[in-house]
Image 1 (cartoon, rainbow, N blue to C red):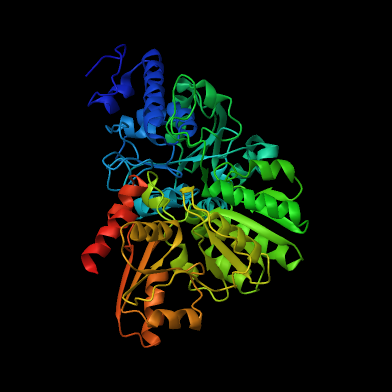
Image 2: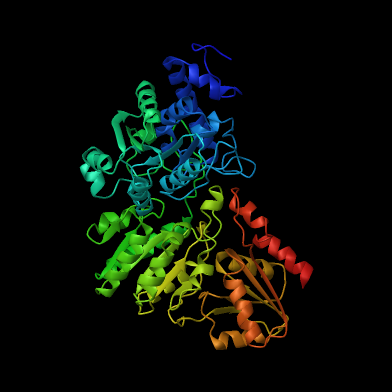
Length: 579
């Protein structure tokens, strides 16, 4: 054990106990070391930088004042838990990589992580759940929820706060108020400030403490000590600086440093530059811009992911027709449905993983009322280092349960353009899926592509094998087959929940049908097509290669696909061995 004046090493096996007795000079030096470690790890691997830099002192103070893991610390989202990982004996060296720790709290990674998350605004509900069972079992431990000022405005968090005032089970809520969401803050609470709603919390039965400087360890010690002594739920309001300790992230009001790819620490410039390539996300943003330019009755809605979906140009050019609703996916879709029914044609750009939160609104408010909406489903498919909480692999499977929607996935730029134009028709909710990859395939003009029909790109006289290949990987596999002299027909099923009888009839003539979908789980498109073929009386050999119905952990996208043999080059070897 070191004394209170000794420097604390991040590699110390007793760091958790050392910080409890250290003086503030030592703790401030430790916080500086932690920031350096976070910057270095994120520069190498990519990850969430500015949110973690802003929460260093908050996390150190919580570890110092509570008996973790007996006491429970629940981070909202968990993207700001890097300091927590270091203090609980974990390394950031390979964070987000195959053999490294997760970017978020992860239940099976450490006893210090009592609840896994990756989406916003779950922490207060989870904390209340622990507190209720604690009280029922007459146990004695504290439950702390650390939540940001943007997340606490989400409907789920507000529902939890409302219910928590009724159940009376004590929770300590630490509000990290940095006046930022992923990008600039949205909404009335941000305009009026949390100080003006302090009385509301007190009227609900909570004890309100603050606002205090969230980088002042002494002030944090005093506030947390007061909170522990209280017999009721406490909300500690902490003012922090997102990105503190790394100059480029401190002045970032756009959200560039919220989640970043690997970068050079000295210059702040990204290392993985691709000047001659455009991402699918960026191209879909260009399509949205083109639609807004050409059709004055269109509007654009995004739930807090303006930066990630490259929509800054759209928002700058069309300020009265673009709406960032904040972390409010359900609101985004219901808002879109009413806009559509009022005579506009709304465009919603939303990550696949976050769209899960709006299933009911898609079904009840949008599809049931046949609202004509274009939805760009960003980051569809496997996502890489953010892992199980962010993979966009489930949307086709659950959207297929909803009557009247259109689900599509282009493989080329021109297919995406054609689908975007088609989506402006009266087709109801029209989903266009785009993976987290670069767009590098062009093809012929597709102005006459019929609605709901597949593209039979290669039709061979030899009916031994047809590849039904979804998205860009499907097209890449077809290119590999041709390059290796393997004779196979290839159909691109642009419309993933449309099974035209003439398209199905063409498939029935093949001895072998191979479905290849590296962007969705096997009980989505692949399973549905198998069922349709069976009902149509298909007698040949049907093989489906898709992602297993799993929660796929963090690693590179290529490594994730390789778990199921789904990289195009792996599929080529499978075809050589099978056919």
